[in-house]
Image (spheres, rainbow, N blue to C red):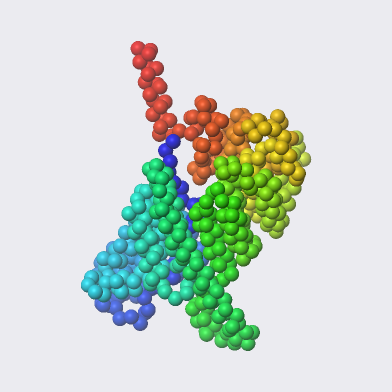
Length: 526
């Protein structure tokens, strides 16, 4: 099956908002500039400064800048630089939003135009730095990273990371966002190199580790910055100063502008989460100590921002992967230890779900109504948009445990059968039933969710059920879930089934196979 590495959905290098304002109006233009140009550039910049800019608005920005450059061929260099920066920013946002390599390449081209317009000689570097600033370099790096992922080019990847690094160097100081973008880009670079090494059959992981190690170093720097900033804020944080700032509107606004990129507790929680993810990627999968060390990092991230669903779901991803891999490294942690970990995890999910107006026991009620074809189903209440994603993630984690320890059930660990023997009745395993109900409820609220992990569960040797596996896997395929995640190795029990072979083939390859079969059939007829 042709493999194509998917970028992370909650994108690790999402384009930051434009913070580079059009040049100071007191700057002397090289030639007189019509107020129309100034007004248009300012209008576009104001639009990009907004927290949310629609895809249509972002697309229109590019068209407006293009028309502006075409109408004013003799714009002074300073205004051309502003125009290309805004155009590149708009394209980079669209590229990041749509994971579109063509738009990303176009955005990178606009930033390259800035480089070429900035002149040459000894002052070139300073001129480019002034024109792009840290935001421009980060956007350029983000665009190149999309291109590198699409083209699977290490050369383009290195170019992208160089832009992120330059953004940090230009930014300086103790700002958060630029460094954090760089750390996430390094992590994504490591993911790409890992993927390429797997495709090439390379055994060495030194290069991959170097990306993750560098990302960890950036996280350590951010931690140091946070500690310094926290001590500084505690020292200066008195109520009289706050009151004075509120009364002095202009001074207060000026101070807010200066401090808008200082690290908050939530920011530091994101750093801790990235650190946990990176440490998990560097873990020795056979080491129990590394498991608990990384889990502690995840829990530290959750403690800093308890309402952050992303942190809990990332923790679940890590535990699920380690649990499924544990059978390759002996019997420890034991089933009872894993149960403690997953029960603790479920308690955290219950709290987050309850905070969002959903009680976990509702999953059983939803499935009962569906199974009994209850026509008196209560009126569907509007739920928080994070609920189905939380259910899907919890179901994924619980499914990993059930698949790894299919013959252990209940709160008291009990070995029911020999490890390779199927359970006589999967429905008797309460943990199995619980996981199924949670995943079915996730699918009930969101068509794309729940189905893939249900298919994985029904493909596992202990609970093998071809009919259910096919239903859920084809459901996942019909809603596009397999585009995000599909590992054929999870379905070893189904590899010889004709329907699975057809589903697992890339579309082009399927057409080629069907064409060959039709051709051979015609030859036989002849």
